[in-house]
Image (cartoon, rainbow, N blue to C red; front, side, top):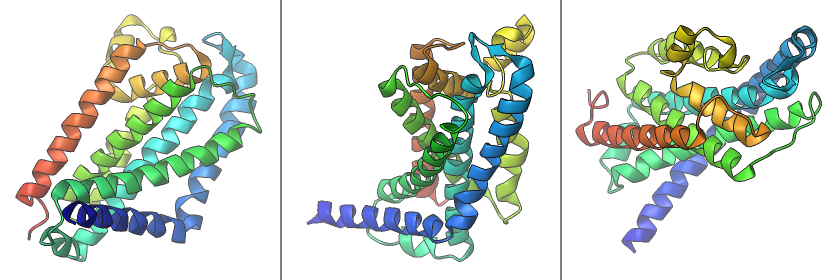
Length: 257
């Protein structure tokens, strides 16, 4: 009976999160798709014709995995940070915390909700990419695994941002000044083999660099990083962030006013 109680609580949170972003799909699903479509047109078609090949592939084929990954990262993050902070701002999260629902059920519910939005936008972008490039997935298992792990990591990162945010302005600082630069410097539009040794070393410190390149390996069978090492980094980040989020929930950090 207790296990069933936790399952119902988890399903309720997930369904609420999915309904939240699907109810306003014009604001949550359409704009990212339009933005990525513009990337395909401008960078893929117009700029790509001048670039030619990148890493042994046509430029459009090269950037497709990176753009899909970018959309998943941004939307997994933004869904959790906006949803959890809204509940914290309205003080409705306190009612959830004092209920007999374990913290890990609450956290996992928000994370799965963030994953749902990130993967939904990723699926839309993937379908759009079929109009611009011939998509062939070389390693389906690796492709699916890395996209799931990445959405977990950035859903958890969004949760941490929401916990420490004190205003709606605070939830936009990290995406603007941290997340966006890391994405653009993570090899979405270029191969790090083109960079001087110093900047290659700097890129190696960017976790998104490993996510993008591992995802690209799943699509194209080619990567600038060792895939096993990249999965190890992803796994460590996921476990560390999950444990950190549980600790924050347990101590009420940034939640109890």
